[in-house]
Amino acid sequence: MIQLPAAPALTVPSAVVKTSYLVGEQADMKHRGSDAQWLSAASLDFDAFVAERTGVRERWGVPSELFWFTSGEYYIGSLVIRHELTDDEGGGHIGYHVVYPWQNQGHATRMLGDALVRCAALGIDRALLTVAPDNAASIAVVRRNGGVEEGGLNSEGELQFWIDTSVA
Ligand SMILES: CC(C)(COP(=O)(O)OP(=O)(O)OC[C@H]1O[C@@H](n2cnc3c(N)ncnc32)[C@H](O)[C@@H]1OP(=O)(O)O)[C@@H](O)C(=O)NCCC(=O)NCCS
Image (cartoon, rainbow, N blue to C red; front, side, top):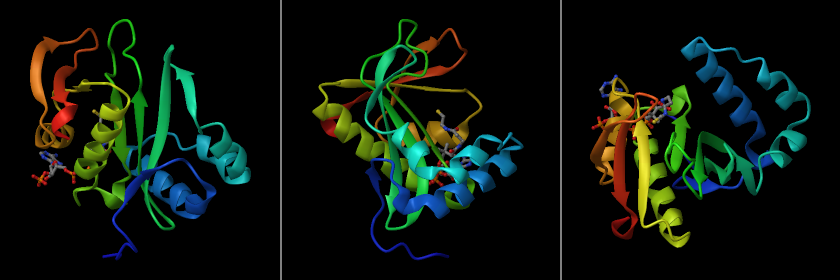
């Protein structure tokens, strides 16, 4: 297995991880059987790709911030924090993925833990996470970070978990 140079951390998007990002996302897209066409533009102008993803931006109608989970030149996954919930609360406060080559090594669990610290700093005392009922891996990640299921399925058919960020 690859030895990471340091414990991974949430970082702002950066060209430092360009190769690892492109290869990792392409591997993940192929594994999921998803269209990887969006990587074409990213590979041609990665600086522009990064610039479009940096800072607090209006996405889904609410201020949101994107982070990459990285160690040195290695890109492991992505995470978004919505500073406010959308009107229907779809997607919750935090969304994330770990690219296929790095899955099942505890990265999502640690990445969500780091995000909860950031949520607490933003004044989000209780973070909402929404997860498809058949996504056993993500349910495990949320539960290990203190997620408590509450409120039944939302309008998108996803389970709703609340996490007290003060214990993060
Ligand atoms: C969900 C996801 C983020 C998990 O990332 P990860 O880095 O592999 O997560 P971790 O290694 O921290 O923990 C995964 C846990 O789920 C378990 N798991 C993995 N696949 C599983 C499966 N098919 N069924 C049951 N449990 C599973 C692992 O065994 C692990 O638990 P353990 O440590 O007790 O053994 C990753 O699979 C992913 O990106 N999936 C696609 C996008 C997605 O679903 N995002 C979340 C949307 S809410």
